[in-house]
Image 1: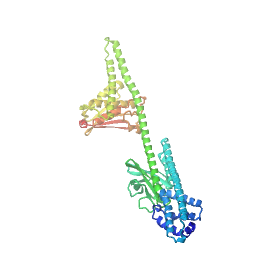
Image 2: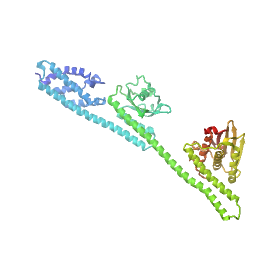
Image 3: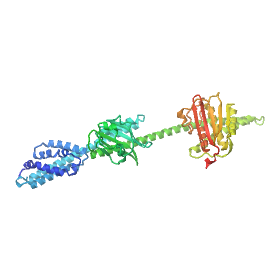
Image 4: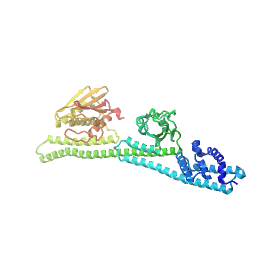
Length: 540
């Protein structure tokens, strides 16, 4: 019987050759080069024969395991290499001549030593795995911290926050570049949101389609991570900037948004070659983290916008309530005072002027309340009710002007061109025209006239009210017909409900027509209502 040391010395090459043949067919060899597969076992065999220090062996095992973990191996696959060595030693011992065969005790010591190596390997593997998981958790925690900071600093550019997060992902993947593309539903393209590392500047302005023939399109179409082993030779469409950057391999993942594509994130490395299973899993985890933070950011932005809208609406309603109380108090106080005068006079004198004043002020209150109710209907999605009959717009305009002249004097001019009669609701048109003329008085210069122009244009009639005054700013013009949209101040700092123009639009649309405004410096402001000659079809 030979000693275990002598046996391993004499048959070491044979054992290693047999081991390499069996190990190359095992799962533990997948994706490894010949050198990567065989780099540990000679040291292990030397340690078993006493030709290498056990501390040296453990350093080799640590390095070996670090590579295996990085490439995505499981603990069983790492231990399998030693189990194969044990089988090869046992098989070689059984086939060796009797005088070269180790004794059962010697063979048992070899196997005990191998078992000890496997236990140490398992323990070391678990430590490496825990460290790897902790490292991944650390990167995910950094992403969460950056995302929280972004939510609490809404004024900072989104691209800067995303670049900081991509820098963390690039570090986590030991990559040299990273890029994030988000899907734009309007253009149906993937648009660069941020890029860091190599080719950072060149990757900023890229827009690509969802075509799987492109790198980003293929990543967007795949539910699994997509690896590009060599950017230089791939047949996929890749940006020239990326090809020139020195990046060889890409690993990308789709960022989902429920059942829709949110975007694509990829990292690139200078190293050419396949990515490990663990790298695939890590970029998936980082992609999920990025998706979660993007969704949280989107929800936070929507919530912030909704809060701002509610605050603006609350402020408008408070202002509306204050103006409502002010506007109603004025005519009601005037009517009450006039009524008290009549009571004190009794039968001693007839005062038709006081009666007319009461009637006029109560009419103003009635008009305000009717505007409020009708605009409320409009806001609720209901159509403005109309009582359509034959109507002469010139008569309506003259009636409104006659009432307003009693208070404002002869500041009005009416111009009529052609036949301006049609089938409309007289009461609603009178109120709409009243609101337009009152608006012109409020914002027009006091020393200028308000012009009311009526004109027939084919099958339509156009009603225009023009005043000279400061132009309406472009940013106010877009929302000037919205409810509570009082955004400009009258020269006398008067305020109104912001309902008048909203009612004008509701009235025009209920008749099947429209309203528009033109305003420019030196020209003044003109509101124009266009009505079809017959509004009855619009009520069907």
